[in-house]
Structures are given as structure tokens and as C-alpha cells.
Image (cartoon, rainbow, N blue to C red; front, side):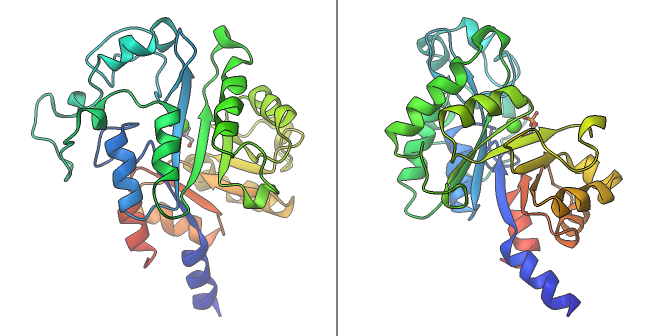
Length: 273
Ligand code: G3P
Ligand code: CA
């Protein structure tokens, strides 16, 4: 019986490519997302920020310094400024690239707009879900969510028939950001990301209206009883960032719904898929 349950969980657990296949290709580039789709990832994770001229781009840090050859805050740069930068070369400044697919196109390593990522997903030829994380820019109160909904609407993704059917979900460490999303579109699923277990939510509740918990793998390792509580409260649990084989096993054992990983291919292989 135990084996059958484990097998069923290995088949059903969703594998989400964190910033694309970011172990093998530079994070948040088209190259990383193409690779993740090729690798068979069920879903893609991306962080979004607004440029000075109001475009949503996929960049994790507040500044572009770490992941490009430029400098400065995303919020202070225009899309044209970002388009002039290279978001791939930081990965091989001192060494040969360690990813299999050397980006061929310049587009593969230039700044990635959320719009381009949505196109890639739409053209993928199979169902690939998208987990979009709003970072919390105080400078842009409400505008990130507003632009996000406009863009999703253009792709027909803003108003799913039900949360369960939605290929897109919105994640954030900010409950307020998730609240704004739900106020605009009540059926879009939202994921409350957690780095710590807040004392207020220790009983397994989530902020009002949120159905999915997004704890770090550290929380899962240290507080498995808390994960049980979330599940008993009827929540789905999506865990980040799960790269170690023993953590993948732990997530399967605990009945986690989605694993967010930098190594989708390795995780799928470990799950026998
Ligand atoms: O998927 C959630 C995870 O990405 C949150 O942390 O810093 O990688 O955005 P971070
Ligand atoms: Ca993220």
C-alpha cells in the first residue's frame, strides 16, 4: 500500500521550474524557460517587476547588477535600457558555460518580458502552467498587479472558470499583493509564500482568501507538523526551492502538491517521469 501511495504521489506532484531551468541556463532568460519546457516541467516560476516605463519584466533582484552586465534598479530603468543589456554572460564570466544549450539567439539572453514568456507558454504546444511571483515594490503600490491583470487578460488568462482549472497562479510574500489580485479577479489562485511560520498563522490558516501555502523547504524540514496542519485546513502546499534528492523524497512523503526547483529534469527523473 505504502509503495502505491508513494508512486501515485510521484506521478501527481507538480514540478515547477524555478526561474526556468536555472541550474542549467541563466535564470529568468528565454533560454532557461525553453530548456524547462523541453525538460518536461509542468510549470514555470518567474518573478516580475515593473520598469520605469511600466513594462513587467522577469528579474528577481531589485537591481540588475547580479544577473546582467548593467547596473541599477529595474524600477529606474526603461525597457529599452534593459534591452541593451546581456542577462546571460554573468553565468560564464570566469568559466565555460555549464549549460548544454548555448544560447544561440540574442533574444535568449536578453531581458525577458512577462509578455514574451506568456507567448512562449502559449506556443509550447502543451499545458505548461505559470507561477508568477509579484515582488513587493513599495514604489509601485498596486501597479504591478494592475499591469499583470491587463497582460493576463490579453492572453485570456485573467478569469479562469475555476481556480482548479487556472493555468496561472500568482504568488507573493506580500498578503496585500495577493489581496489586490483577488480583488481584481476572484478565480485566480494565489499562493502565500512563507520564509518563516508567522505566529499568527501557526494553526494552519492563511491570509483570507488564499488557498495555497508556499513554505520554504527549510520550514518543511523543520516543521513537518505545520505542513500537516496546512493540509488538514484544506490548503495546497507548494514548496521552494527543492534541489536536493532527499528533500524531493521528503516532499513526496508529506504529500506536497508542487515542488519548485532549479533542476526540473533531475527532479522529474528522480520521480520516475
Ligand atoms: O518560488 C518562490 C521562491 O522563488 C521565493 O523566493 O527569493 O527565489 O523569489 P525567491
Ligand atoms: Ca521567486
